[in-house]
Length: 539
Image 1 (cartoon, rainbow, N blue to C red):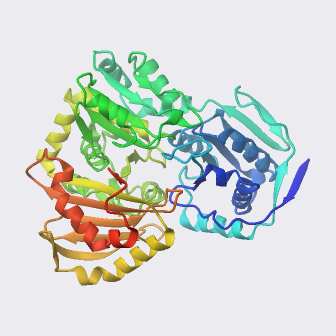
Image 2: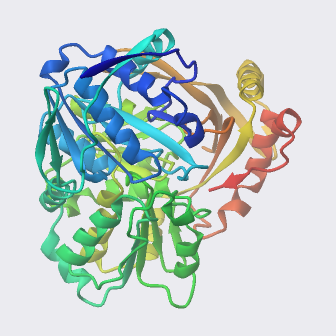
């Protein structure tokens, strides 16, 4: 039977840069998830001809949510559902499954790098047939549906056993439980030289891959320990847990402190990497050395010829506006295309599909390429291991050689969290009005050359999008301000500080950026506006 349930709209279901993210207690309200799902299906024609992927990062409420998606999809007469075994699929693997099987979209249940559990966060990334996030026009159509919804449909089918690879039906909808790992692993083998990587992994080279109790634990076990032959225990925090074992699954210097402490100790292995909850972010560490995400994108781009899949060349590279200018210097030297987009992986998709770029990345610990339409944490780790295997150099030496060649952008992101939305919006609006008056002024020795909103003109669909405010200085330094779209507790003001130098390559970033950070605080008037005298997080 198909039931039609009367409901009332929720007004807070507008998707951010990567889907809908809410506190778990909000997402578990009566009909909250059902409303959102029905709103999505209401925007999709000919559902009886459409197929979708379902999976997630294993966090709390995913198992219940997956059963709801199956039943609502069946009630809406969806043709077929591909569901990851045990409800698991990483964001990058999900993108590949959608593309390989020519599906019409997918639901990846994840709040990405946000914490899990009943007191944590829950999220849904809704992907389209591109294998990536839906475009702004699509998310707007879904949001309009959430404001007008009055009923949803749900099939009265028993819950599906997700533990076995099988095919069954709910109403007219075919449901196939699939292996979420095998296709992704085969894709990685097509991109990288696995025999060379296996030689490195079995040569005494010591490395650690930290899955932070997220979904890439099983992927890492199969790739690094089984395929490449690294010793058992190379992959740590490898079991997907509903609350991530108490970890905040965000691979940065703050939340992966246990890994940072290891790499800065006498027991440090040669290399370490971490992924976030759903596997699309990465952090790269050497012995007593951290590679910033901005430098990571630049170094990968500069070494593309070492990877079999890219040996014949790459189209170009793109970065988010908040990411440092390091990769632009590489693109200029390689004479390849360069693009700067708003934050949000969806803005890279048009550039990939039109063969404008091969690589792309964001400062928030994400890098990827056109093999899928999402960022890809394990891809980045295998790329770095490939550079090490080819050069036999340490992570620090690889990075230092890059800086000697191109110069270094000292870079920090300051997060001011939990700001009331109205306060944050007013701060940004007043700052935008103030920008023209800043040109020519000097702050702590840095003279403003340009100050303007960042406006992106899509070269494919010719749409325009404003995302953040940019202040440039005469020496090439920059400050970027934007409000984050990934939080669930008020607004987060992010201030990005960048200073370019060609000497003093191994200094402390906080010392090198002290005066510029102070200037950023002064210009935004953040203390007077929010009461915060310092950032909540510095990365």
